[in-house]
Image 1 (cartoon, rainbow, N blue to C red):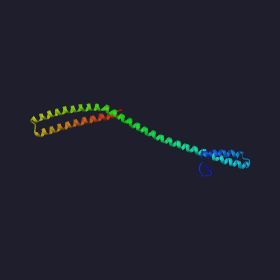
Image 2: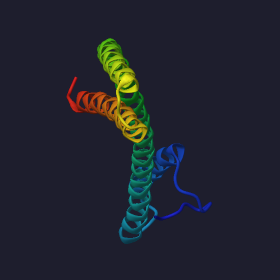
Image 3: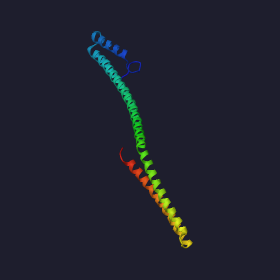
Image 4: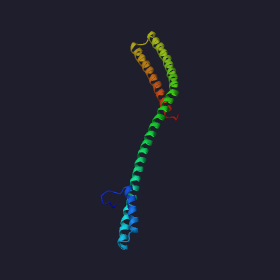
Length: 169
């Protein structure tokens, strides 16, 4: 870009001055036509460069504004997405929590009933005429049976919750 005599790019007041200079050059009859054309050409080049520079600066400013607006929009979208995710999670918990409580209570009642039956079985074993070794082994097996049922019910509950989480709300 061509510089004015002070070495800086042209400003708006300088543009008006350039236009005045151009008008004076056109009206001046003291210089040759060839020299006049050269001076006018130089003045026009300075004026065009000035307009180009102003346009470039304005474009850069607009790009910067758009970039900042895009960042704000992206942040707003991220916040909205997080808010929606939290709302969905809260609604899911509200919908599923009562169901899981009912299932767990039913399973606990079932486990309680099973435990009572094992206790009755073990009491009968005590009054039976089996060798102590067999009684001890059967009690151990019945205790393990209770633990297996408990583990199976826990696993079924976890599987049901995992399946419910995968289903769309």
